[in-house]
Each structure stands twice: as C-alpha cells, then as structure tokens.
Image 1: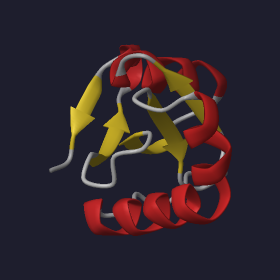
Image 2: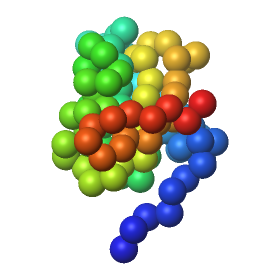
Image 3: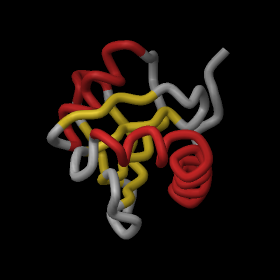
Length: 93
C-alpha cells in the first residue's frame, strides 16, 4: 500500500521532532557540520558530508522515503525533500 505524501510542513514538523528528540545528542557529538537525511515515516537516517549523499544513501535502503534534511548542529538549516526515482532530489521549499 502506497503511503500518503506528506506536505512540506508535515515533513518539516516530523523531521524536526525526530531530530530534536532522537538524534540531536547522538549526532552532535561526532557528526557536527555534516548532513543528516531522515525518513520521517520510519526514523531511519543517514549522515554524510553533503546533503545529496545522505539522501541518496537513505534512498538506497528505503523505498520512496519522505525525507527531512538537516545540517547537524545548525537549527536553521532544515529542508523537506522528496527523493525521486533515479536518485534525484526535489526540494519542497
């Protein structure tokens, strides 16, 4: 069954919550200034030096993820993204 596509606002809200409550303390210790891509439906995530790399690696493991991207340690650097087939990234902001 295909999952309902979330709005940019819903992805942002869910992604921010997952980052703040589950990942922030863990990632800010050793991954500051890297990018984290979070599947807002599963909580699964990938960390990489570039946003595209984090998103692509997450897409390789998850089918049709609804992705929130954050720069670790930078609260203003958040984006809601939709990974498209072929590993393309479509920004929703």
